[in-house]
Image 1 (cartoon, one colour):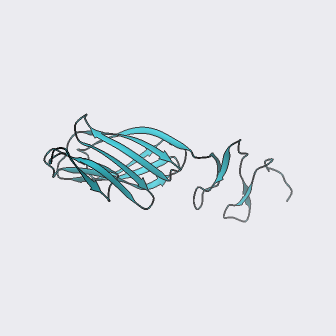
Image 2: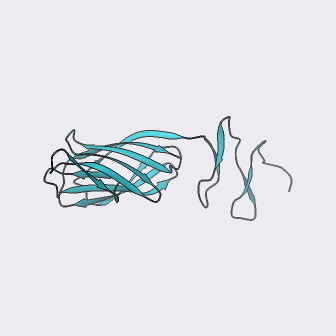
Image 3: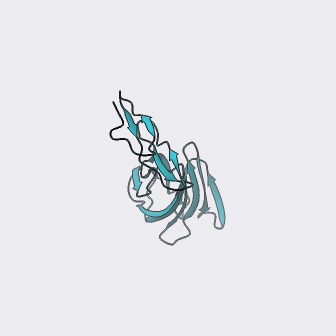
Length: 165
C-alpha cells in the first residue's frame, strides 16, 4: 500500500495487528530498545540512568506506591533510605528477579543486618517494628514499590534512588 506515513530511517515493526508500526528516527548515540510485549520499541540513549527521590510515611499500611518521572523502563534500581535523619537507614538494590539490602540494626547498636527479600528496609529502635519495600514492577516511566508494614512503625522515610537500563 505504498510508503505513505513512513519516516525516513524509521524502523518497521509488527504491532500485533495486520498492519505495521514504524519508529521515529533516533539521534546520535541512541539504540533501539524493546519496551516489552505490546509496547512499541523506541530509540533511547545508551546506558540511560536517572537519579531521583521520594518519601514514604511508615504509618501507612502495607500497599503499593508508584514512582514516576524516570523517563524510561528501568532494569535496575539502587536505593539509599533514611528515616527522619535517624540511625534508621538502609542501602539496597533491586533488579527484575532479585533484591537485597543492608540496614543498620538499630536494636543491636553499631551492627548491620542483610535482607534478601527487600531493597528498602527500616528497623525502628526496638528491633521488632519494621517497614520494608521491594520493586514489584518496572514501569514505562519508573517503578512500583510494594511495601510491607510489620507492627506499628512511625516516621517518614526519604529514599534516594538511581535507576538504569
